[in-house]
Amino acid sequence: MSDDRHAKGSVSYLMEMGALKRSKRSGWWIVGVKDPETIAEHSFRTAVIGSVLAMMEGADPARVALLCTFHDTQETRVGDIPWIGRRYLDAKKNETVTADQVADAHPAVAAGVQAIVDDYENGDSLEVLVAHDADQLECMIQGLEYLEQGYRNAQEWVDSTRAKLKTASAIELADAAQGMSSADWQRTYLRQP
Image 1 (cartoon, rainbow, N blue to C red):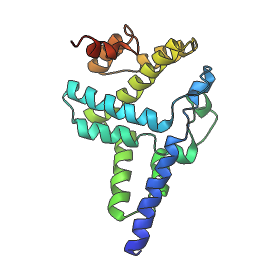
Image 2: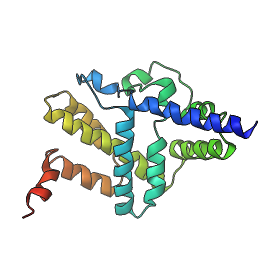
Image 3: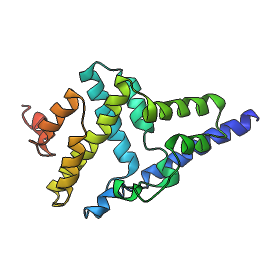
């Protein structure tokens, strides 16, 4: 394969990732949220949360952020299938989808992206544990924000994602989040003279 074809394959992957900016997180429709966040918005905050959790847990923040960034990239091909819908589908594994997505990319890109996704899906390191907690904590915090907006059915989502947290740091942050409003962050600025 020529360098030109690898470059085009790599750029095709990058352009495909742009679809995540337009794809909504469909699970929230089940609880009545009319205009939920996009997959890209979810992945961004998951990466930030993952970095923070990694710092608290003594894990590698850069590695966790990388795992979180790529954790839902397959949804360009299969969509955001909520847990209730997954029980009725026999979908390909995320590793298979990723391999197809990067098939024409530069070999180093293909190998790198596939290794990240494989680690997220199958690894057992502290970084993988933290990345999974970051995904759940982001969903829980998003649910709290939707509760504030009047979507009462989001409470079940908040409760179910919180129950999946495993690290002490994620549980500590979840406890703190449940006692705050989404606008509390402004108070640090408002206290300034």
